[in-house]
Length: 128
Image 1 (tube, rainbow, N blue to C red):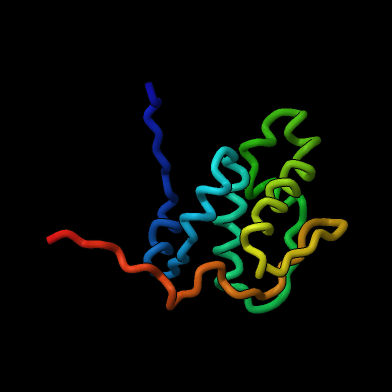
Image 2 (image 1 turned 180 degrees about the vertical axis):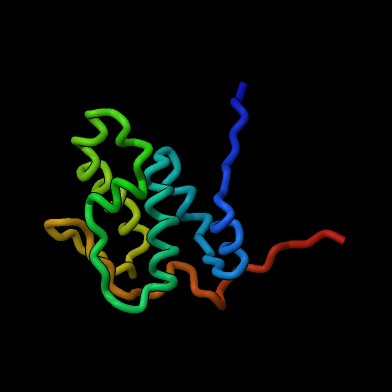
């Protein structure tokens, strides 16, 4: 029996979503399934790259804060960097155009094309 699940959005995010949409590749999500961290990294990176205009370094501390649910234990905190790096490798194998480099204090993001181009969104089949 599946447990019920839900997602609660902050008011800020709820208001932002319709104004700053970011398409994702459903095929990529299927390839990344089985790891919530991989899915989170993919959607986060897709969003960041859609609006990034200049290079930025996101520190390991900022990444821990962003993806913090898995670091609630001492083991999680100690292994966050390795776990995040592994998830990022999976994501970059799929989103090859993303210009991301690991640096000593985090990851460097450089402007890159979005994974799904804005003009390439598939039309949804609508029923009358």
